Length: 276
Ligand code: SF4
Image (cartoon, rainbow, N blue to C red; front, side, top):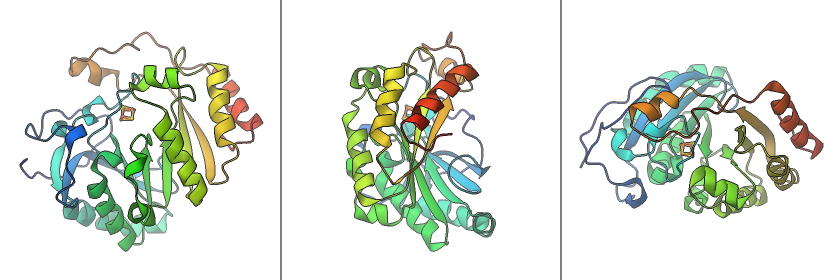
C-alpha cells in the first residue's frame, strides 16, 4: 500500500518522479478501493484552456499510451504520482468552487489518462457535480470501454484526443491501437454527449493531408462535437524526457509554421467542423 500524501498545486510542466515506488503498474491496477484513493501528478487552478470558463485541472497519473510527443511522461506510471484520497481532492476543489461557478467553469481531469483510475476519477467527478461544477475529462479514448453509464452521468464534456485517423500512424505515434478511440467517439456521438476533439499537429508525424482529412471526415457528421481544437506541437516537455532518461525522438522536430496550422484548420472547416 502506498503512503498517503498530500495533493500539491503546481503545473503540468513540473517534473514528478518516484513519489510512490510501491504503486501497482498502471495496466494492472485493481479498482478494489472503489476509488477512495488514487495517484495524482498535480493540479492547476486557473486554466482557460481545458474546457469552458475558468478550470481547475487535475492531472492524474497512469497512461497506457506512449505518445512520442507526450509532454507529461512523468504521468505515465502510477508510481510517479502522489497517493491521495478522493476526499482531499474534493475538499480542495470546494475552496475554488464559488469562483469556478461565477466564471462558468469547473473541473477538468487530465493526465495521464483519467480512465486508468476510472473509479477514482468518477468519485472526484461526482464530488464536483455535488459542488455544482461543470465537469470534463481529457482522454485518448483508448480505455473508453471502462466508461459506464454511472461515469457518463457525472460527466458534462469529453476532450477527446484523436491523434490520427490512420491505424499505422496511430500505432507509430502512441504504441497502441486506434480502434478503441473511434469506438468511444461513436458511442459518445450516439449518446449526444458533448465532445471537443483535440488533434496534436506534429510536423512530419501527424500532418499528412490525408491523415487530417480522415479525422475531419470522421468527426464532421457528429453533432455532439462542439469544437475541433488543433494543438500545435511544442517542446515544453522535452526536458522531462531527458531528466527521466527516456529516448526522445522529436528533439529535432520543429514547431508547426502558421501556414501549416492554417492549412489544417482549413481542412477541418471545409469538412464542416467548427475548428480553432
Ligand atoms: S495519451 Fe496523453 S499522457 Fe498518455 S502518452 Fe499520450 S500525450 Fe502522454
